[in-house]
Length: 346
Image (cartoon, rainbow, N blue to C red; front, top):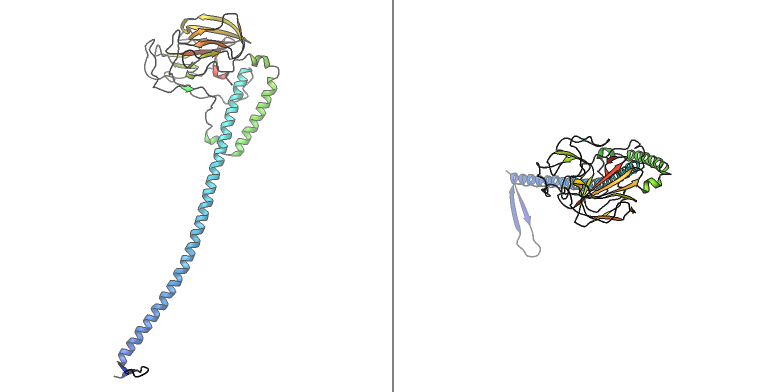
């Protein structure tokens, strides 16, 4: 077998080095060198491939971030548009309710407006028995009916026992209307059509109101007292008998001595004691409209006297059948007792 000698001659006087290797060993060295070179080439190629993939990945990640930012911007814009549509829809509902009340006050047709379906407030704080009325009496026309026990809470309450004020919070007086279902505000086009229809309806209303200024002036359109509505107009569970009865007005509760104001000009036709209403005042506003104020503490007007809008009539008390300080406020139109909330627009 052949052998090969590799002679290494250093510069100067250094010792000459001889390295001997067999033919087989040389082949091995050559093979190992070739394999190492191949591995280096393959590794370098893989490294270049990885660099390309990393550059592509960085581009994809940048594109994903851009798409994500655009999606977030679109989501925020859609949310803003939805909130704006909801605000427009709520305002439209408020205007529609205001128009409905004005039409009631002016005795004009409703023009197919939506009827209010808001739930009446639960009994709380000061409530009263209202005017005397047989249990089987028929409520005024147009009054919503309810199933037994629908507007009351708890079991029977003995006469003179205050209701549990923790059962439900009293509803503060406000003009807030119920929210419009989201299905009705899905598109701006639908809102635009509703706004255009409401605009035409309001134009018709303005035309119909010409010549009715005196009647509107004599209409009880403001709150008779500040406080909370503790019992609404309609069926309820009596706080005295625990049975279902019809409440012909609204109860507004506040502190003793709270001023009771005239919601419209008129003439006092009664001031004195009136059964379960205790100390009560009745004011005739003309055009068949009368208002009654019950459970008063002190009366400041006499029968036959004329009162102006906003003039103080009495102070709030708890006389008669009452569980606490409040005023029982009733409105009669043409001899029929109606929901006072339909006439309050201020």
